[in-house]
Length: 93
Image 1 (tube, helix red, strand yellow):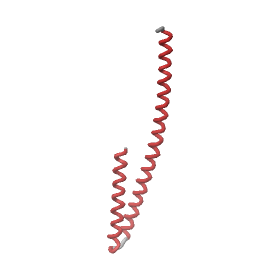
Image 2 (image 1 turned 135 degrees about the vertical axis):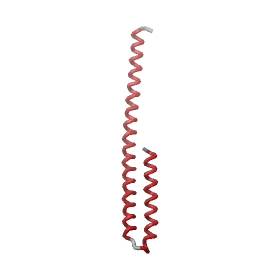
Image 3 (image 1 turned 90 degrees about the horizontal axis):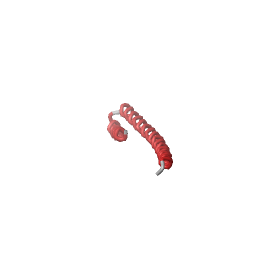
């Protein structure tokens, strides 16, 4: 194989690699964008659960002794939901 042919072959290989790199970069950008959307959704979910928990806690504080048991059940559910969501988020990131 001549030197010219070898050089052309190498240039063709580099062009192919450049195309593959460009394709990978596009995939990476898409993955980053999707991860950002997912992260924002998860963050919003965590904030909503936190706010719901805060509301339940305020409700518990305002409740009289008779209603406190009923409110406590809702508070415990909100607490567990928040704890589970944080554990999932921590495992994800």
